[in-house]
Image (cartoon, rainbow over all chains, first blue to last red; front, side, top):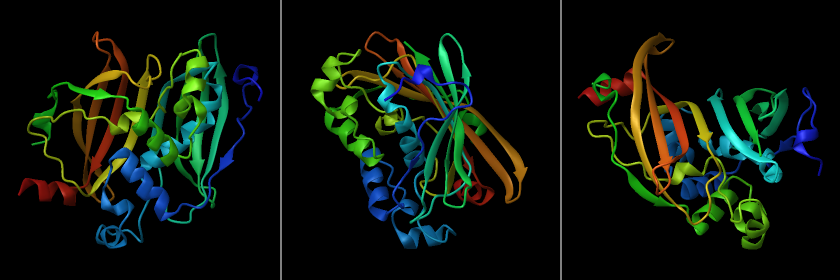
Length: 133
Length: 149
């Protein structure tokens, strides 16, 4: 794998498209995170909340997005990770994770990051500042 | 009522970055990378240990902010921010607390929306801040009315 620090501004990390979102994905995240809000796992509760069906935890998507940076742990770490939740993620949605290098200075690499659904809409969007070590 | 909670802080809670919890969390976000789960990879890394994914602090206990009784349902997570001085190491103890940074209301499409800003801290045993976390929680007018009863 190439080095993160060799990336030029405007270039992207290899994007990743996740398998369609399944109920089991969300049950696993509920258990692992301790977030048992039932709108993420139980249809009736989602409907009671006025939703067409269960939705993914925003933090599930944010957690997934960070994995684009995991392989580069010898080069540094995520110092700042800022996300705005922009859209809901439903069952069977196909989410693509993206990161584009926007800034490169002595101390940090600044990325614009986003997760988009199969319609091309951003569901979460934000910034990662990767600290060089 | 929520305005009264601005500046209030919970007491510190001791948390451990547990190996099993990190593995389970890494798997749940589809990122069971060796740096999180393989002891040998951890020992050979620059950290000489396994580390935790950046959003792992979701699992920590931050203590209770007295007087802040948020409903279990109907909250909308608007924004989330993490800041790290270094990654969390598997096996270390982290002391966590949280405080209400701000609360304000704005008129939106579905009535008056409340915006609650909560900041969380994770410190090492010497009191050095390792990470902070800020979240903006949106509370709709309907949910807020329910809280006032």
